[in-house]
Amino acid sequence: MATLFEAAAGDANEISQLVDSMLQAAAEEGVALSANAVDFVQQISEDAQLRLILLKQLVEFAAAHGVDFVAEAPLAVETATAVLKALQNYTPSTPISQPIALLFIAASLLFAPSVFKTTAGTLYGDGTVAAVEGIVPF
Image (cartoon, rainbow, N blue to C red; front, side, top):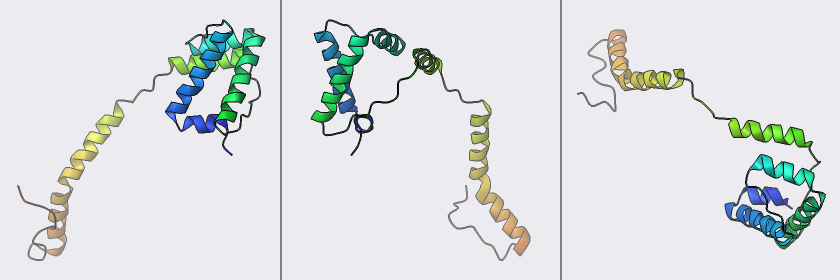
């Protein structure tokens, strides 16, 4: 049987239902959850009752959707905060050499049939190789 987070990872609708149920459970207790992931982790780590409320809500949500809820081992707040901050500041970048290399590869693929025809004519004689299949002369 799939776990709650495995099932939710494959379905955006289920993720939004899960988040909504957590927000609703917190609101019923008079707690406003932070939308910022780092603040959320700190908020949960500081409030034991909120942790229990959300844990209960996750168990109920999992049971209602026919999946298992497996609680992960607790993580140090500092570690979780550091990881979330690193992910927030991460911006993947493409080195300038990649598009330049792709441009040269594209150009070589455009001229490859002409090079093959010329090479074949040199190796086997001009009369033997009349044309390379698939090429329409310009």
